[in-house]
Length: 204
Image (cartoon, rainbow, N blue to C red; front, side, top):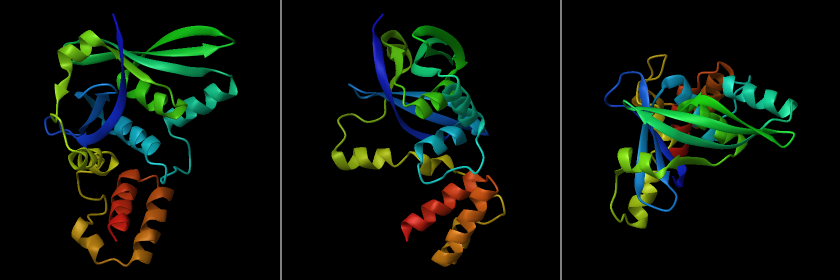
C-alpha cells in the first residue's frame, strides 16, 4: 500500500461533538482533506506547537515526552495513520534510538502533537484517504486558499473566554491592557484565553 504525506491544514471546533475539535489534514500532492475529531487538550497541545508566539511556562505532556526523548536520544522519525475502524483512526509512531527502529502504537491526536514537536512527517495510506478523505474546496483561488489557511489556531477557540469576557469586551481594552492580559493568561496556562487575546491584538 502506498503512503500519502499529509500536512496540518487547521483546527476548528467540532459542530457535531461538544467539547471536541476537528483536526484537518490535507494531502501534500492533492486536494483531499482528512478530518479527525480530537479532544480539547490534544487540540490545545497541537495549537501551541503550531503557534510559535505562545510558549507555556511549564512543559505540557507532549513537551515532557519530547524532553524525555531528547535526553535519551530517542528520535521520532515519522507518524503513520495506518487504520480506520468505525470512524476511529489508529496511528503508529516510528521511533529510532541507536539506529534501532521501533514502532509504537498511539492515538492519532497524540502522534500528531509529537510529530509537530519533532518536525516529523505525517503519512497515511492511500486506501484510508480514499475512504475518509473529503474535498473541502475544488480548484480554490490563491485568495480562497489563504482564507482557508486562516482556520488554523484562530478557530480553535470557539467559546467565550473563561472569565466571561466576550470578543466585544476585548474591543474596549487598550493594547497595553490586552498585552498584560495575554501575559497573565500564559502565566496561568490558560492558552485558550491567550489565543483569543492574541487574535484581538493581531487585529489591531
